[in-house]
Amino acid sequence: MASSSCVGSERNRRISRDSSVVTVDFSDESGSSGSEEDSLSSEFSTDSDEALNTPGTSSSPRRVSTSYGRDSMPPAAQRVQFCPRRKPGVDLGMARRSSASRFLRALDFFLLFFSTELVTAMCENTNKYAWAHILEKPTYSERDGSWKNVSPDEMMKFIGLLIYMGIVQLPRLHLYWSTAELFSGLIPRGVMPRKRFFSFLGMLSVTDHEATNPATDGKLHRIAFLLRHINDVSALHFQPDRYISVDERMVKSKGRSGIRQYLRDKIVKWGYKLCVLADSNSGYTVQFSVYTGSVRHRAYMDSHLMS
Image (tube, rainbow, N blue to C red):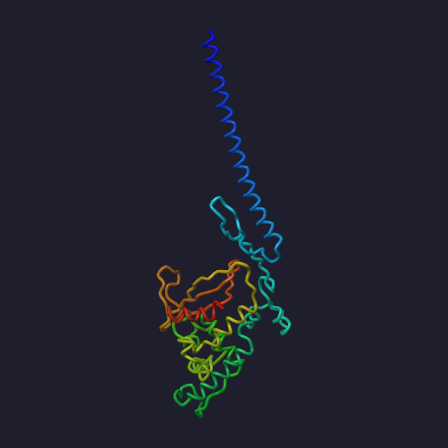
């Protein structure tokens, strides 16, 4: 019995010694982890306090402490406020102040793009070109061999006939002036004589040829002035919303031109391809450019459209 009691007491002392060691080990680990967490939290709070207390450093990267060291992490991207100078949508403020029109007719909106200044410039350029080439094209001259100057009123009638012919299509141009009963309801014969209309087609010059530069404007140098004007007016009378899109459109045409494109997957397969910057909500065209080739068109996009 004495020996068994001695063995039992020895075993109890060993267990108590081991348990005290284990207890000491656990207390040491918890203390060390707590000190590490305190140091990390103090470092993080110090860095965050410095970032908050330093003026003008809201956009600077914040230092964040990790177990692997100190890493520089950028802040979350802030949403950019969309604050345009004008209210998104149609803007006719300048046009209303400079004109007495109430914009109740389609013609009123058409005149926003084909303004009096544009039509007058087209008349001047056409007359200048006609007087320089009338001897080469005597078919378009008057009986005395001279050229009859184009007036803005005649130019508007000519543009109106072009739009009308795009809606009411006939296989030949001369049929619009036919006296046959089948074509008795057409209006071109009462608007402009056929010879005068064909004289317009032969001598029409949108741009001053002496002021054009084929090296910069490329294949579109004959209408570069008109394209720039339409783009400027399109951006002037409309403020796009926050979301815009860049898309391509096809203008149907069967004319013989080196810039005409064929796109198999489009509804309109043959025609002129336009690269368009448009408002995503309304589809309004803010800017556009006519595709004339990969290299030259890319340079035009960089210098005109995307600016």
